[in-house]
Image (cartoon, each protein chain N blue to C red):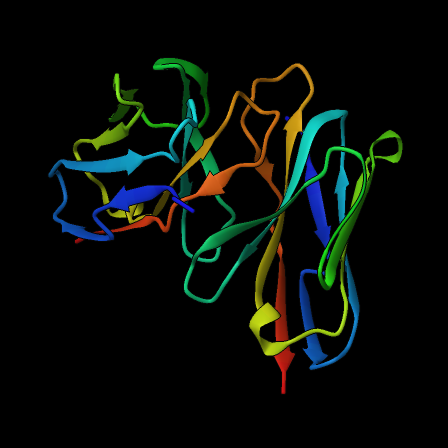
Length: 113
Length: 110
């Protein structure tokens, strides 16, 4: 079965640079979520989209933005990167908002040096 | 926001043993899911279980929403069960995001 696809798998950036993470949800899933997981931490919710509109917002810094496109893929844009942004970034998708299982991609490991 | 507490925080089992992981939450929820994060970092959905009991092979889960807790049972554990088990909840009337607990780190030894 198709899963959530994230790219790139690994990304190394320097401080103050920008990064763009991509997410392709499971076909026919209309809701996309972004989570950030620091080392040894639980995943923290950043933002979600339902039918290409932002549906919920969590602890996403103002330096980050995201959108969902007409083909339902989503991108997380991160600017002015800081050392503390180093983390595993997960995208997840589901069918409908909050009433069905969440399926995660394999994540993008971002390292800021 | 809602508090999600998982216990125990760490657990070491010998292969073949059974275990019970607990998740307590501080408010009413619409949605509760259990995830397994394997040593490679992958997050796998185990159960979508806002209430009731479900079984999937050696794993089963029970959520008693009125008493605000959920239990994950692992029977006949295998080394491949090692990793971190997360409980995540969606608070009622508070958006659709799942809030994760701190997890239970499980190590199954041969």
